[in-house]
Image (cartoon, rainbow, N blue to C red; front, side, top):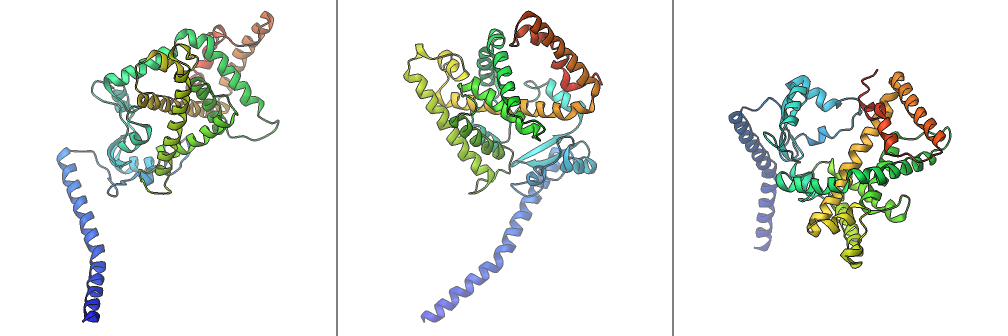
Length: 357
């Protein structure tokens, strides 16, 4: 009796295992049919939504040269045109490579269009991140940051720190050595942001540890949103948690000194003293500014270094502009750059466009 029952259970298990692939295939087929029907009703542009859940994220994230749009974009533009639909980072997406439409969207941001990130990226950046917020809360967070970076602070603090960190990076280069412009740009911008946000000095153990956590965090922001052990997304969430604990410990150190004794030289101290933000809001604000300031600036510096050799006229004009400033400072017996020197760098300020070639 026991043997017959055991044989029957084994037979049922085999039937279930045989049917499982067919059931899963049918389930995926029904999802695709339903999605197709929804897209037809919405009159969406042509495109391919890819696999359920992941969409075309893996193809989109394949590495490509910074001087090209990448194989993914090139193939989709060739097949569907400059405006097409896709599924990226777990979200239905309309991709635009059309300059006219992109200009229209940017000009009407906050009116006809609202800036946002996919939910997976929002989960890493945090719900109070300035990059995720919209409307009044985004405006308030932005004003807090702008008030900290006042004109007076830019003139007295930022210029001096930018020069200091630039010289620090330059002094680390060995003669006739090869280095990565992108890595050096990231090192420069991270150290500068860490100093202005939390008064962290470059090269110190806690600064270097934070930098390693931040690199892991960044890899997860631009990865497939798969929250499984070992994935870049899971590691990014873990790094985010550790980074927030580090920032929180710095907050607690400041608060122990008393509100009236908090130093306002960095963003963390300024926010603690001049805002009514909650602890969670402050943590997300600090992390989002570290992210935004680091990524945009480092990419701009690296691309400028890459493109400048192709424009000898621009390099010559840069040399002339800075040689003249250096000559004037030597005659005045000065060494450090100041705000007046920065205002004289008219060509330097627009060098990224290389319009003079």
